[in-house]
Image (cartoon, rainbow, N blue to C red):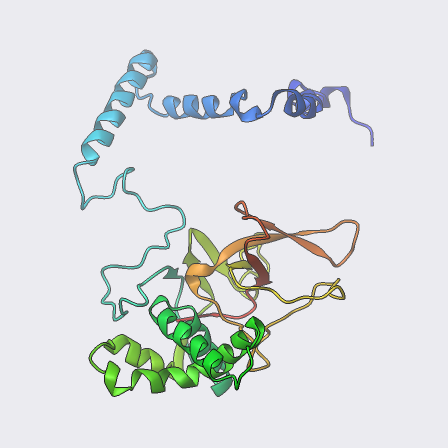
Amino acid sequence: MLFPTSFFTVMIHLTVHLVDEVIQGRPEHYRWMYFVERLLGHFKSLIGNKAQQEGSIAEGYIVEEALTLFSRYFEDIESRVNRPKRVNNGPNLNEASEMSFIFPTQGKPVGGSETFTMTQLEKTQAHRYVLLNCAAVKPFISEFRDYIRRNSRGRRPSAIEVERRVNKEFPDWFPKRIMNPDLANTISTDLEFLAQGPCPDSGRFTAYNINEFKFRTLSREQGSQTQNSGVFLMSDTSCIASNTDRSARLIHTGDREEHDPYIEASQANMVYYVNDETDEGYAEAQALRELPELNSVSICITRCNTTFIN
């Protein structure tokens, strides 16, 4: 491709040296003038009298500083001090909430909800995950682990065997335990309702704002130029794998009872996928925030191909 001589302006020539600038003088944003030019552009917008430009900028700047100072003393008026963030995931405090102290309102759905009926398998999976990840139920989980070890018929069960029995038997053991007359005065009403499991009818959304991220399902972001369906979860539990697992594959799809297709909204973090140019059909997940050391947590990465359940 041939370019005319007039194409090579100063800005085009600048791109030739950007790589060397990054290597020799990083971080480059401390030496660039982009943020200064942006501030000067804002000052130009304050000009009301072109005959007295400097005076207009000075007066406009003083007015902005004064308004910013005064706005700190007004609580019920939206200003630049208390203005919601671009991704507003705070709950709507004006609406009446029936959430308990065990599960405080977190995040904010986008758009309307759709009512659907959960199958028995979905109810079992959702109930188990909520119980095993609820802070108020943790003492009962530890008690059930001790119960398994005491009733192992003279042998010491392995940690993997104990966790498998917890995942399978705890949802049935927990309601019987809290109905014990000895604990009747110490069990809250919220725990009693939690032990009964979810209602068969629930609501779901195709978009949800949580942890300052905009999560969207795959079906909703079809045709969009942005990605908001990548999700990763950090867990402190062990991950079982073998040397034969050399290719990416879907796990916990929800087809079997022992699968965990659900997570809590507060646990969701976002990743985006970059296509690998050397391997067609393969994409690499990139986190938007720095990940912790992999030897301390297990990370599960997937995409939102289902809906957000309320």
